[in-house]
Image (cartoon, rainbow, N blue to C red):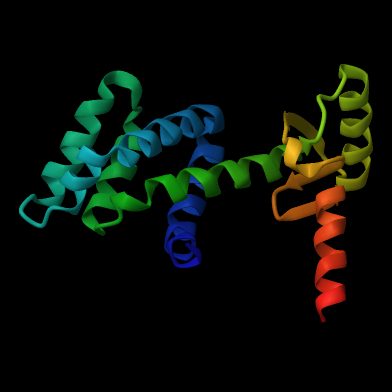
Length: 178
């Protein structure tokens, strides 16, 4: 996984810089997400992995599947990826592009797993506290995970805060077994 991200990073950075210069971050983001979803399909992945097809054909088919959804810049980007035999990196490029975009916009997506459903008030308080702590605008999504027993697990990019009872029990078990 880390290797794919390493390979995808220069392409994502180039796409991001081009999108910033063109003032088209949202358009590029949505188009890259569309391409990532299409490339994730097993039939498309098989086409892209086939050595029997030329890179021009692969790029053309991928662009054709998207129809009018892709702008000229993104189509050229797809052709460059195809020439370098990197079309399979599109999902990684889309993820990295989204990270670059979030950093530029000073926002972050936060995922909260809770043992019980959060009320809107509690969710807003958590969002405000996290926004202050992370110094970014926070977009919160929460889901119930009853296996936590109690507490929460918060994931924001590479930061994980495990304040769950299950997490504490796991730490206690490891400490006792050491």
